Amino acid sequence: MDEFVQQLANGVTKGSYYALIALGYTMVYGIIQLINFAHGEVFMLGAFIGLWTFNLGVTAFGWGSTSLVALVVVLLMATLLTPLIGVSLERFAYRPLRNAPRLAPLITALGASFALQQLVAVFYSRGQLAFPDLFPNTSFQIGGANIQLLWVFMVALALLLTFTLTAFIRTTRLGKAMRATAEDPDTARLMGINVDMIIALTFIIGSALAGIGGVLAGMYLGQVNFFMGFIAGLKAFTAAVLGGIGNIAGAVLGAFLLGILETFGAAYLGGEWQDVFAFGVLILVLVFRPTGLLGERVAA
Image: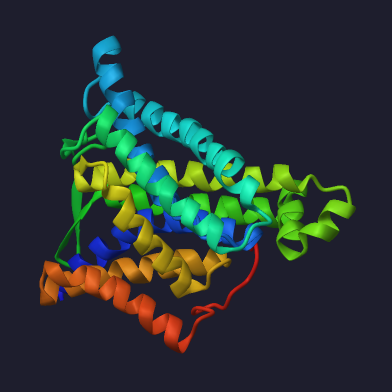
């Protein structure tokens, strides 16, 4: 039982940053029916922006590794800078192809993904880089399992951001405009909604969430590399499909379930099985329930 609780906690924690990436996938798909495969690289860039910000702060201000100021500034910088990347992808890579055959933006997304990877590899590093312990290394016991305070913070932050996003979409004028655009962009445009702005806003929000997820993953894993976004992005896409692509609640549910399945598969069958579990789930869902556990739903 102790081992079960421990692995469950590990899986839920991993699911927290999968959820933040999956939200970006599901929002973009809900609005313009595009699978943005470069979204995983936005997550990776969030981690690298966090690392760069921390190193800059150490040089300029002498930050300690568990400084609360450092944690807040690193998260803030990742939140502010990753949307610039996301909205640039939308404006220059995807918008010109919006009326093109659906295969064209998909290939462009893959090309953008590899381009961002190689830019980081060339101009920053190709190796594994240690990520600082920005959160106090404190733990407590639940049911015989050792639970890190960082894990609680990650899950709580992911859930808080999910609830905030849901409230934004359901209650604000911009959120209603996003739902209208997802339902019928041509009619939304006739009703006076700036569809291009709404699509850009979707990329901004999704990229900010992925950037935060990158910092959380860096703290959880203790290291970052230029390739980390590719596999994490594919798994987050799997989570979005598992829950129901286009469905915010489904994306988060799918992310936590995938994190738990991965962790238990690695714990009881060996680490080499975790990717088998992740992509095996994707195949099964697409075959037996292609709309996901909660069903496909647009923008909410």
